Amino acid sequence: MAKSPEVKLAIFGRAGVGKSALVVRFLTRRFIWEYDPTLESTYRHQANIDDEVVTMEILDTAGQEDIQQKEGHMRWGDGFIIVYDITDRGSFEEVAPLRSLLEEVKKPKNVPLVLVGNKSDLDHIRQVSTEEGERLAAEMACAFYECSACADEGGTVAEAFHELCREVRRRKAVQGKTRRRSSTTHVKQAINKMLTKISS
Ligand SMILES: Nc1nc2c(ncn2[C@@H]2O[C@H](COP(=O)(O)OP(=O)(O)OP(=O)(O)O)[C@@H](O)[C@H]2O)c(=O)[nH]1
Image 1: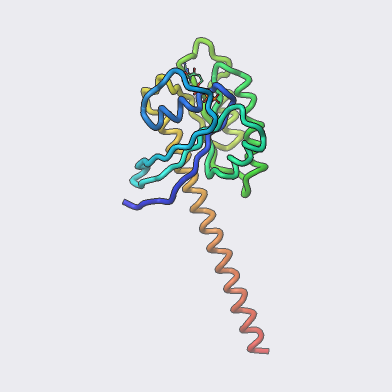
Image 2: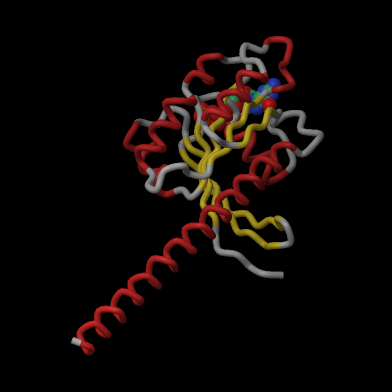
């Protein structure tokens, strides 16, 4: 089985949307009701995705970090999960500004991104419909998952993380090809220059 390079993932979203709960669910398949508000934690994890061992570094950011900290974490990451809480419309409204900041900080644009609407077990107090989540994800051209860190029977949480890893690898492969193509072009141009000089 091929071993791929490390993938750095960062998880963003308003305080209390369940970022830590999602990371813990993904890493341990368990749910823990209460956490200290996250300062900032990084986890290392290996998973077998499409027959390839992927090593991930996962950064669980604090919902209340300032813009400089956010930008630093965005520069660090290869791929991003933006989380909102389906019972908190304000957290949904914070998604688009986070995405805009990502697009400002990361170049090239169109960074690997997954949108997650968490706490789907609380459907009775939902403030954001599934369609709204789908629409926003379509506008941001990214995958969308509605899930629950606390009742994740279908493994949707892991699927969201795995899809993000796939997306990071797809983008890296495309960027690698573009870089190779441009260096080949440079070599060809240099040879042509030399040939023109010799023949003149
Ligand atoms: N019902 C329900 N509660 C959840 C779920 N996910 C998280 N919670 C609860 O929501 C609260 C906040 O969860 P955290 O994981 O600490 O949220 P966070 O986004 O990491 O918060 P900060 O670290 O402050 O940014 C906790 O009381 C969790 O138990 C979920 O899927 N369903």
